[in-house]
Length: 349
Image (cartoon, rainbow, N blue to C red; front, side, top):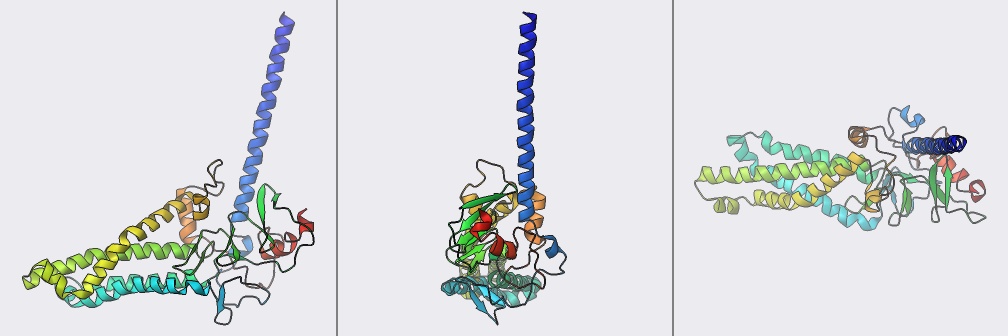
């Protein structure tokens, strides 16, 4: 009896030890996979050594830009031409309320308040145009296509060091995590967020921060113009001893600024808040909409503070469309390996 009890206890102990060892091994594999995914998502060391990740060098002649448009000697990359009307509307809606506000309120604020109150929207508008230009004209993170067609049927996915790479039938490459093929631009884009017709291009790894600054500055400008347009109309009514209706009728510039800024408050404010939420949890719009991390934890998030700092002012990657003086072939996400090593099915199988 005693011998059977001892045997049962030893059997239970061995089983629990085996379960514990398997759990520890699984946890170690998960940690290694998370570390590998973060390394792929992080800025490579060779990019950190550069003083600036932005370059005025032209796009390499060997690069096929998909449906994107190259301008200014192949130094400026924009989205498809069909998005130009949306871009014009964006610029118009961003410019008109600021201009009409400054013109209409200058004299009144100069005498009764402070002329700086009229100038602030103009300053914000200049900042908006700068970040809009960057968001619309720089490489969003396009992964160069492979020009060599596969001689055998490639695997749909491959896993290296716990990192999943998916095969793109259009670009003929294995794209890294968080990237996606944009059907509008006809390119695979790193850390693809969404295609924005109002900016005229894809929003991805390299231009997402400028998109963030643009929508938040636009919301700030809308709030400011709306509040101070009301203040201007109240000052006009008090100074002329008339009702607010007469002040509205006599100040068309303020009326235009007031209406456009009011209409922009909800959609732009909602968009800015939504993307601020995405930044805080380190997810893209594509990932959040498709519930990519519904069943598993997000391996890329490192806390709200770190995520926000990285999104708004973290280090930047160098464009893969610009030919470097010295290519590095050891990085899994560099242009050389993605287009040469992983694009050949023989290397993937």
